[in-house]
Amino acid sequence: MMDLVSVALVAVLLLLALSIYQVRVRRNFQWHKRCQLALGMVLGGVVVLFELDVRFVTDWQARAEASPYFERDAWSIVWWCLVVHLCCAIPTTCLWLLAVVQAMRRFPRPPRPGNYSRRHAFWGWLTATGTLLTALTGWLFYLLAFVAT
Image (cartoon, rainbow, N blue to C red; front, top):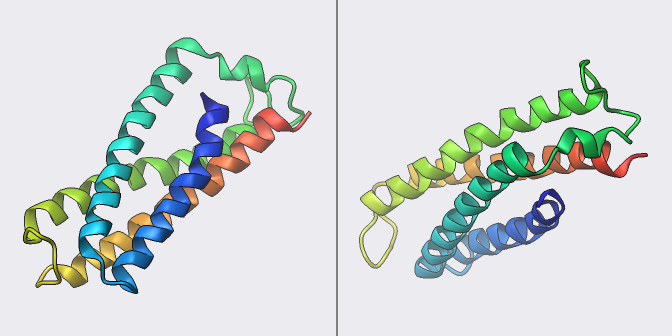
């Protein structure tokens, strides 16, 4: 599951960039809305499945023991990377929820610019930045814990 999520993050970032392009350049608000809702639902489901896998199925620490950057019972670089990753991932999840819920509540149907557009753009860029940081820190953790030997 960890391997799959690490690879899937590339597709998530590409779709996120395409969605931003569609709304900013092409002004295709309906496509942006559909893409963001789909990404939000897929990411939500993947996060739940990923957490279930990491907590109850896969012993990630046993997999990471081959890494020279991991120590099970000490603060190694892998643990620090995990902490930094979680400091990005948890707030970004909350930002995704905030951005999507507020957009659904405040934009008309079909979507078009309005009074909430500026605030939505602010929260959207913050969420996109958080998503990028979550991916980068996740990949660093993945490389140090599971690829480095």
